[in-house]
Length: 113
Length: 231
Image 1 (tube, rainbow over the protein chains, first blue to last red):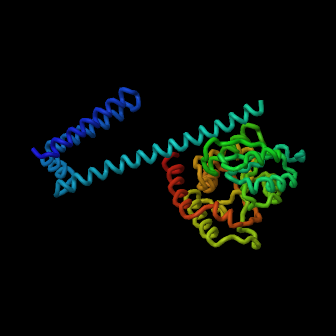
Image 2 (tube, chains in turn orange, purple):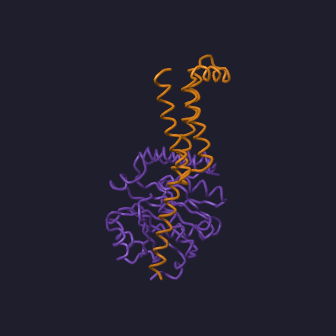
């Protein structure tokens, strides 16, 4: 067993525990818990059985090399997360503007009364 | 006093750090017979709000800076809440001539349009920096691609709206990209648009404050998000 096969599962388990903690505290939804649980379990599985999983993945994606398949999958996940973050930030921005606007109009109503 | 025919007209001025211009602008607007003036102070760090109040304008204030699009939408919501029949937006940096307000309203009052845009390029005697001409051309093109309506000054800050436009306009972008979004959404809501020529005065200061290349990138990204992904 290589060193990374011990380190990666430990780090992934810590992140998984953090994900569960966030869900218990009500800071994330059940869908997020399931998504991240699957992600960290997959990371642990990849660290423990790197060749058998990536070879199967490469065959399934029709790629010759298992490294190519892994990079392809990692990029896909990264783009998805980036896209999701972009939407979240946009939404937060829009909520902040709405809040600022409501405050301004409410203050004006108070002044008028 | 407001001339009675302008009692139902609200002049909206989104402002951020415009203490040096706001007093003279308010005086010029009053000289045109408009007394219902709203300053949307976008969390200025100078005395914009105090000077505006001292000069008789109504002021609503954002607690944090959100950008000209957000400030304009606050003005629209104020007009909606207070049942104004007409609303005119004008830039706070004195680049517009308040004499043109009457021209925009005159066009609006013909009744065949809902939104009138003050066009800076229809007059031959306006000096407009080349960078602005280029930027505006690109912005017009982007707006056209999204709206299929050709407007030759989509980025103008001087606009007049009737009640239908006041009720139906909901801007989602906070920055300068709201100008393009406004034209596109007006098209989607079947608002009829016209343009009238207006004067414009560019100073070194107003050139620094306006839009540039980065705004263009933001415009594209925001429009993509607002119009393709959210609707």
